[in-house]
Length: 111
Image (cartoon, rainbow, N blue to C red; front, side, top):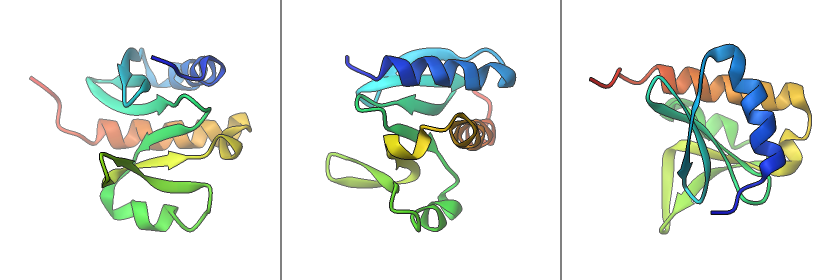
């Protein structure tokens, strides 16, 4: 599995204030789970996958740096791919991570 290790380190720092994240290989990158739900994922080219509320996805696509995640030709309704160039700034990355954490925590707790 290949993922951007620099981005993964930055995500670790960004998720730390939200609690302990569990790291797992996901979507061809390294996923960060909080409370049992995947919040964000470091991609292989420095891109970031972020869990979002389905109702918010279309509004996020206004910026050309954000697109819906596509896997096996299917467009996700709850995952956005954010270009590496859009998360170079730590404050911007922190906002995306916080969005992913909030979306993950909005999911029902696993039992």
